[in-house]
Amino acid sequence: MSLRTPLRLIRTPALSPTFFTSRTLATTTDAPGTAVVLLNMGGPSTIPEVHSFLSRLFADGDLIPLGPLQKYLGPWIARRRTPKIEHQYSVIGGGSPIRRWSEHQASEACKILDKTHPSTAPHRPYVAFRYAAPLTEDTFLQLQRDGIRRAVAFTQYPQYSCSTTGSSLNELWRLSKKYDREGQIEWSVIDRWPTHPGLVEVFARHVEEKLAEYPEEVREKVVLLFSAHSLPMSVVNRGDPYPAEVAATVHAVMTRLGFKNPYRLVWQSQVGPSPWLGAQTSRTVEEYVKKGQTDLLLIPIAFTSDHIETLHELDLEIIKETGEEGIKRAESLNGDPEFIKALADIAKTHLEGGSRSSKQMALRCPMCTSERCTEQKVCACSR
View 1 (cartoon, rainbow, N blue to C red):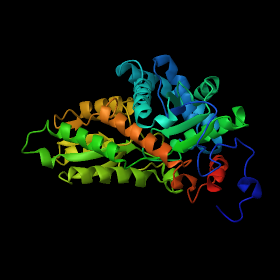
View 2: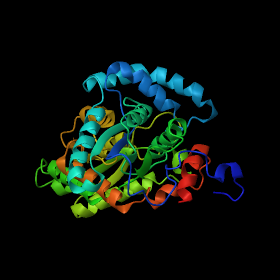
View 3: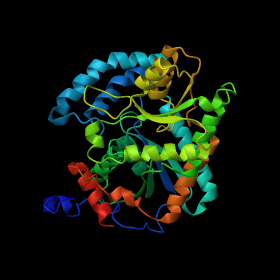
View 4: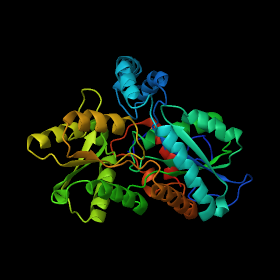
């Protein structure tokens, strides 16, 4: 933060007194139990929800920065893209499965937590999506109706980005200011977990299981393409940690695999004409095939469940349309029991540690000028 930053931005905001305001958590509460709130982008569960999903998505300058014309360009882009995206969701079953998987993951992880960390039990599962039902605001109000006094905001983006986890936390901060100025709900945050051993192990096992489908003589020649959602270069260049954290996950998985295969980290789901982080997944596959490398394994390394980016973009737009038998995709994490155990372990470690968030959480991007992030992080910095 510049020394010339106006004082109005660096004084402690008059917001919820228990949202990122002290280093350690209270050890007692007047209401039993702990809410575990899984945060994610979300996706439309039905076709009629597609337009509202896109409208919210393109209105969020944290995720897709469109500049001062955001409120005009966002709705226009959403309207233009709705028919195409509706068709894509119809092809993959009429909606995104991300809500079903998220609710399953939250519920099962809480069952494990009740056994492994009984001092904060019962653990109550919630899901809060940024752009689709259940929206963060609706979940926040449900927490209040349920009498929750202690909640853990658990990002389901293993690698932190201001565009994803940051946007979700900015929304929680806004809702806390709007609905809970007295701080009745005491929050803490699991804001990143890119190299958790359980996460790495499940990714590695899914890679090994899919590699076993290749003939033995080509198995170690298969190129592993770790694919993650891309970011606009404007976000990358302001210092967003996401590319480095995704790379850390890839390196951890490759270390577990013993670096037996060649590999690359590639990026998918670019939107609009502005520069995005590359190389693009689709273009990479196309160019490797041209060069005669047709044994390729796609690994969705930044997603915790299937959704349109895996089921349509990877499976249909890239793998099916390419038509090469040697191009496959590793299974997503979805309901893998070991992955759910990893989620429970991450939450247990967080609850035992007693910190509001990771040390990284308080650090703003060096080129950040967002007042939303300033407001949210200033209290974290004063812990």
